[in-house]
Image 1 (cartoon, rainbow, N blue to C red):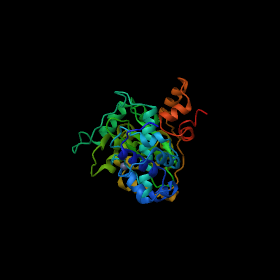
Image 2 (image 1 turned 45 degrees about the horizontal axis):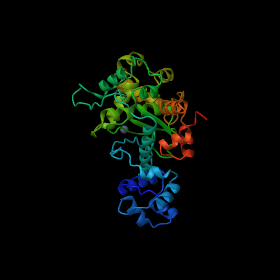
Image 3 (image 1 turned 180 degrees about the vertical axis):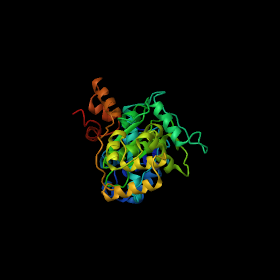
Image 4 (image 1 turned 90 degrees about the horizontal axis):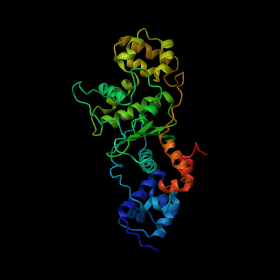
Length: 348
Ligand SMILES: [Zn+2]
């Protein structure tokens, strides 16, 4: 057996990352692997090194190939606070950690399948300035330019985002009260994971919001949630293009505008107020009308679902070039079973 020189600290970190992504506590994994929680804790911090035989037991219980645990990824900083949650109510810490760990794992898999080439990410990071020069709205319009969009509605936001080299993943994030998570560590692709349980209209706004964070908030800012909302609103509905459509706003008009601009009625009403197309009084009345109709919790006119294609295309191309699924699973450091479930849904 060959002696593999490895860094027990990064192996420990990887065990922890996969464990958290699988939603297991230290106690649960330790019990399954037949060691004490105290030892597992030392393994995860790199104080105790495991031999291959022990590691293989962990790999099996974590449903990953051994190589996943022993390969350190050159993606330092992925676990840093580059993640933005759009929380509804409160999200339990364990759910937040699980989702974040899944994002990190997905990033590693995707980058193994779709390595980043120079110049492929075409949108620059632009922090907002405190004057109006680089406002979230101006930055959103620059991003529209970079996406090669005109002034009108965006037909497919996911495709527009992917056209800038970013990766979009739609996944069931569990019952967790979270719409999306995104990160963009330096030297990597921006990756956004959207909750498949979120309705399509909110999912679109959420993706625009997360994209705004990625572009504007490499460093945290006190107003960042409001800024990301302003960015999202302008990206989806440029003020100068939509303003003239927002006068004399009522529910029938909103029913027409929603699928046209791909934004929720609530977001369109907010936009109308922000561009002064309606008075504050109208704004209140329209919101009351939304509530009375029951549209606050359940808006009519569902939007069509937008599905990402970038990663699917990469997998398809590898297969076309003669690579086999087990080889691709190896590349992504996944079991064949998991790889097939996650990345081959369309090509079976
Ligand atoms: Zn946010």
